[in-house]
Image (cartoon, rainbow, N blue to C red; front, side):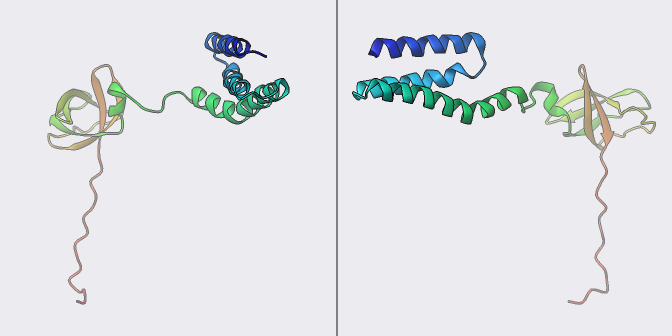
Length: 157
């Protein structure tokens, strides 16, 4: 084996990975580079081929499932207006029955509409949860306020 062989093999496998995106040739690209290092260290051709074959199979067996799972899962971060879903806002213009009002979220004013089936108006100052985004209008529902429990007057100090 020569240095040129291992370099060309690594480049060829890298090109195949770029074209196919199968997460298989990339591991043999890495093992070809490891075999190149073995060549430079004056290892025998058998050792170089063993490093290439066993290294490629070991890397692909160990890392390919992780890489494939990550790619199949897709992005986990919401961005843009999608990140508003689940957040809390404050009504700045009352949302009348089936009408449009306004809600402030992080200092930005958005059009707001009550959730489907909500018949009661949502008053100014009410905390709301954003359930959905339809265009530039947020679909909101009133948040349940926690019930404050008054301390008992019979507590023993």
